[in-house]
Image 1 (cartoon, rainbow, N blue to C red):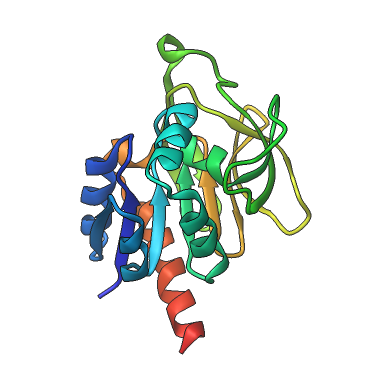
Image 2: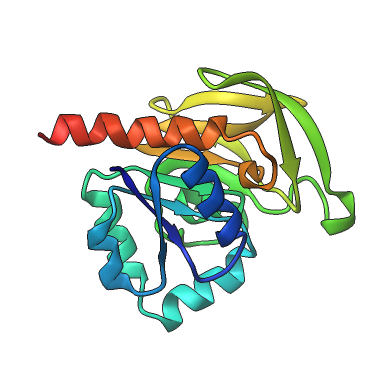
Length: 195
């Protein structure tokens, strides 16, 4: 069975676990860096990227997350997780994990009270995906190897670069598990390639 890790430092961890399980995969909440060796792919959940980075540093996760990114195993960043994956963050000199060739802007859809839902057409996933945006970032620029999967009001809100998947919204906060299912399929494909 496919094992999907959910970084369990902050954010909607339980909701991601339920979504992974709804897709027929096993979910593992990652609380210690040693657990990364046990999983076939990793979800970096939404939350607050600055807080998340503090916790990553506090628990000495950063080098292990970078090694995981280099291992060939897929990673999926949602909301703050997208910011962690991005190579460029507007207003910041240094990226976090920095593996996805995108430039992101934090909180680009406004503050918490400006949260909203929108129906998205996500290429290869769904034509009618109800996406929940909460203090969401968006992708301002994407490199030439980045596949743009969805836009909202001309802003890029979902993209894939090889084994890295990122989105601005919270797919785990609805009962629609198709985007999580897409990530589980990415993991299956990468496991077959590794054989």
